[in-house]
Length: 212
Image (cartoon, rainbow, N blue to C red):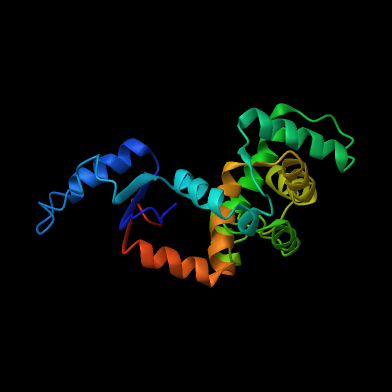
């Protein structure tokens, strides 16, 4: 966790990219002797967004996820949980692997955009459930046109119904998927200002690769 005498953090999509970022930052004027590019420098945490989230949630797991401890659901775990969730909500049609993966992708998109099951359901009801974005942004992502009964809209509606069951099944097995790691961390920091303040005090600098 960030309290281990770290003074900065560098985050990227891969660990290798984070290490490269460290080396490049160390070449900037004024940082030549900072030790930033030294992989043995224990004051600079470097890694992926998911690794950072895992470390943070491991310390404050219950506050961020409602679980005392957790493991990370791999692709097989996620697929099995979604298959079980589809059965739980009474989806009667034969579920193909393509449909199951499509619903998983949709739930993942919602988590990436900070939408829990309730917010995702509301977004679908408003007719812009793809990402939960405002109508104009959502319109552009669809490539024009309003709500329809096309394959994407069908997937969205099914995903909105099954999202709560999928989460319950994951929690029952004490697992988090990759979307939960980021979403849980955001929820943790938004809901606990004292924890946020502690991290801000510990990490004087945070560099995010390809921040969007």
